[in-house]
Length: 165
Length: 295
Image (cartoon, rainbow over all chains, first blue to last red; front, side):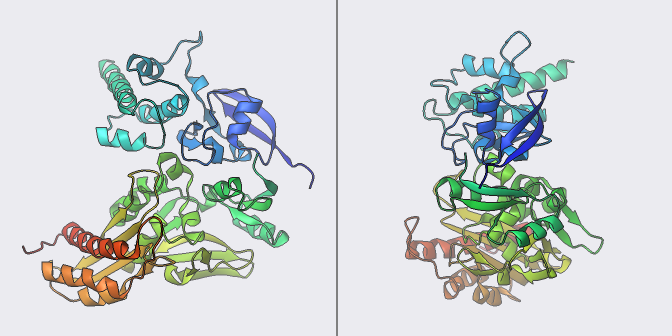
């Protein structure tokens, strides 16, 4: 059978994109190979480790088990989309550094995107809710506690900033 | 790259049926959290796929004027859990599907996929069975509706005819009104794990909360497909709300369930926790329904 392609139009990190996609590709393949967004890691490739996690239309998805053709019409956010105009780190990234929530760093981009999904809700989640919402990731370095602290700290900071306005 | 021979994308149910007729070898892919993993493992290598993921008409939870709850088969677990209709009327279904996999899996996984793959451990299946859910199927010959118990044929096999797809899961008013339920998943981990045993119970109490008017119980992993425990249900029906009733109900499930030995757990262990889960789930359901157990 001849190779099968589909034209996919989507928004990636705020930029409109148009690309011919091999129908056999995962969204991880598309983001890494076509757009060089290498924060999207290839870990388990079966949707268990969360290293390839990205935000699609506001919700987190493991891009390794998401067909690239499904990206058509979608708004996709990867870790690269968090940096400021001059390459500044976002508050959540800085919090991960401050709380030593990063060691080898392989799981970090995916973990941070799950944190973003929480932060974007703009409400205070209980500790248990945060733990449940962050549970789709495997980290073999940190023991998760520092990750939890970084997420909670950023959530509280953002809520306080909102109150102050 | 996935080892996929060809992919056909459907934008509507009608188109999906036509594509399935044109490509009889093709398999349906919904959210893909099972299908893509199986392709990756080589189990379905070289498949032709009909993707129904883009059919937005198959998404969402609605409640008709007559109280019929309709869950589109492509509705994700997280959207079911977040639905105000589910929260108000069948909260236990939202709780059960919130125990599937992890957060990202609950965003991609669909209730239709969870039931169509015919797996006994599906967290949604036992609760749907316990709530007398009806499965809506559409195919070249039109629409069929059948009780979810009849939909399951054997392990991994459901009653889907050629070129047919599941379009919705329906819970009629008489199946949910006045009922309160609880689901217990017994697994090794709290996230990203498959149930050793799942147990879903719901009850309807009398107006004075002293009598169990109806009790329904269903299990996952207690047999090759999700199943009800009719002996236990019959025993509880019409009996007073009491610790003795709960105990007798729980013991009676052993007449119905027949779990097997597997690396996840032995038959005797599953039977043991099966009784305990029935007891706890019924006690909790009674509590949710406003009843109080003596002693």
